[in-house]
Image 1 (cartoon, rainbow, N blue to C red):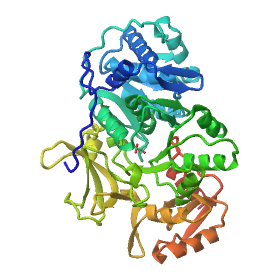
Image 2 (image 1 turned 30 degrees about the vertical axis):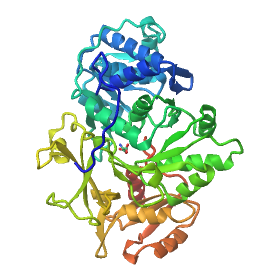
Image 3 (image 1 turned 120 degrees about the vertical axis):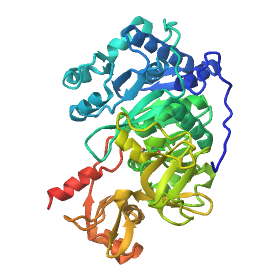
Image 4 (image 1 turned 60 degrees about the vertical axis):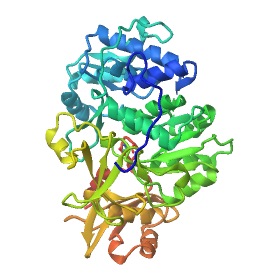
Length: 514
Ligand code: ASP
């Protein structure tokens, strides 16, 4: 492996939970019981309170017959209780299956059929719709936490946890694949703990940090914040249910220092901060993943939050995070998404699986202890993406994404396989066209749709500029072959449940107007 990195952590505790997801909470509760751990819109729990609540939830599950390996499906917005349910589920040896609170019965039905949960916990509305979704027992979250032994602060009557091994499955994360069928990434305790610890080290989370989490726990970007704050003994503020307009106020009230972003959230924060005359929240670091931040947004964040670092990253749920730009190097290579996670390596391979030299574009392949355990009950998809390393050293994730590395091992992301195409004799990627569009002052979001037999290369932008102006500006930035045939201007971009640009809806928009 190219990089070897030793993460120093306390030795295994008496319960032998080192390398296990709930072991992270046990260690924090032993080490920093009175530090604030998790805050939602109704209050805060310390690490000791969170640990007690998670034990109480384990006891609640045991009383309902949930056994190691069983799946516990939850559809809830983030809250202190959901955090306790996550740790409590994995502590029981069961598998936590969080689904997006906005997921509709159409998709929920296939997720439930795939996961076959032993039990479902949701809110009152969810309880009403679940009978058409699953025959598993469904519990209202208010009923769960009204049970006296599930109240934090009470000693809890949790039986000693069953033996859980690092290779056991901690969680299934459903990803929105390009097909209608649900696909869950199998996340073993060991890989989740490894990735979380490596991220805390490389990002430098500190005990005095307050991390603002706007994302649901059904997305790994949200879920891992819970683990990373626990490892760093700092506090997480759960804000996925907060109204957009209150975001900045909430960041100020809670004194946030770290804000994980996607581009749509970043531009919302910029817009709010520009109109706000109050004191700025003490943000010291923004992190981004999922899609590139427009240069104009980066500049605006730097201007509005002077001194804050803006960290670019690249990842896939299948290996959590693949690269991170070291925090103090963010200005050196503005086009790069960073270096492999400490203790892992990234390869760029040609069609035959041979490593390519620096500067050449090929498939991005990740290798290391962060590579997850494949797709749940989906051997064909697993065999395509998770392949044994030819030298016999574990599994490698074939991401289906394309990019290149420079001489120093920094990665440059160019797009999904589907984003690469040939036009007028040139090979290109939607990512470079979007990058050029985002460089135009006044363009807030951009998505390019590659040509197919129904339409030529088309660009969507969110902007107040006219499409003529956008095309004219693009002509100054791109070779002629790369300039889209058409540019459509929208006042608001359709977004996915995680705040990424919804290509599906854009494609439908285009189809609908033909
Ligand atoms: N897992 C990715 C990351 O955290 C995010 C994603 O899959 O979109 O970088």
